[in-house]
Image 1 (cartoon, one colour):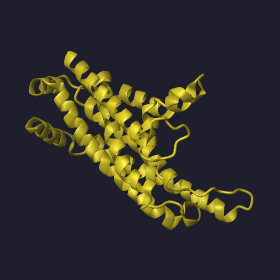
Image 2: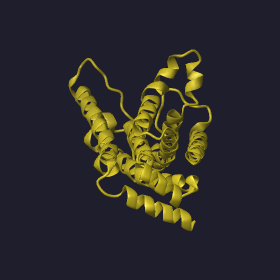
Image 3: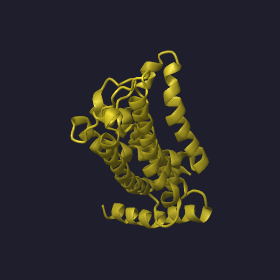
Amino acid sequence: MPTLIRNVRAEAIRLAGFGPWLCWVLPLAVFAPLLISFTVAAIAERIAKDSAILRIQGVTSDNAAYWVVHLGVLICVIGAALAQTSTTQLAPVVLLHTRLQPRSLHILFARWLLCGAVACLVVWLDIFLLLVLLPQAFGQVYAGVDLFSFTGARLLWAGPVWTWIACGFGIGLGAVLRTPAATIAVLSVWALLIENAIALLPHGGTLLKFMPFLNGTFATGQAVAIEPGWGHNGALLYVVVLALLTVVVGALVSKRN
């Protein structure tokens, strides 16, 4: 435990200042999902009030925070990957980390703990703001959104938990690929393209049930097109196992390198 605390403090010092986390990861993670969500809500509300042809279906809590638990989480995962790959870009930095932290698994878990904790706070804040403000500002369409409903309560705790878990994918993959560009490309293409396009393949619906980002999104209580067959808590356990395996593989690759 003292080693873990010391590693977390070291990571906090290393990531502090005007680096990627402060300059663009945190601002994007906070404001991008909110901006998209409120823009969509404003358009839907305007159509619902003014259009005599188009009908807008009311939104409930299970569809109010999609952009947070998907796009916002992805931005945090990319930020975690940048935190990991930044230690492998300069040879003196790599040598220093090797000398000070010969057990790479310890530092990876410390980095996961810190980045995930910060990401948890960001996602919790976004979800809370959406559940509170959407029904107040856009009541005609979002009247069904309720902070105190079962789904609203689940979003508030499972959303941050999923975010922390997902940061493990960024840490582990960053340790394997070792370059920021490759890691960001793989994460973005996987989450935004492959998991959506895989449904078009033969038996794609079955394969889609095993996709990590779909399971994580479903575990928060957010509605998804194809639900895994093991329930919300089962989906959360599934992504925990995948994230742990990813971090362990990343530690093994780092140690070998």
